[in-house]
Image: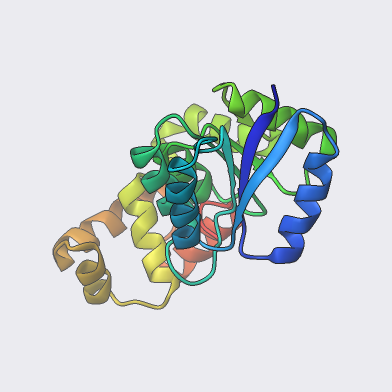
Length: 213
């Protein structure tokens, strides 16, 4: 019995390339494609109403252009269709993306430049409900686990990502629905973990360490 697969990526050429690689394996059948998070949810809703039902696995890119991103799409998908597994297949290896995707419910996280054999193997593992991670991703998670004192919390990561857009403390507080004093407190802890004393240095170090994009 073949693995029924859905691909979510905002680049048609990438989807076409992945589809050709995957369907060359007789154990994989691509039953749907989507170019955005909203389109993916609509496609799943339609598939759920058919006799064949929803796919076994969704290959999810994280950067989906306008609309909801891959992490939020994964969260919504897993909440509505818990039997459908999600494998993040993306070019991003920032810690925030990895942790965000896994916390949202992704079964695995692999990079698009993985060898074809590795990608097909990852599809099989993820469809069976087994966790699968690219070697680079494993290294980042191991580093995070072995140095917990310097690992950023989800809130600290959110603040860093907001600062990366050029937002002020007040604007960050408004976006995250917290007080400005809370933002400042988080910054103190964040600077200490990164060994810096300014937001410019914090962003530089965070990008060097692949904590954010």
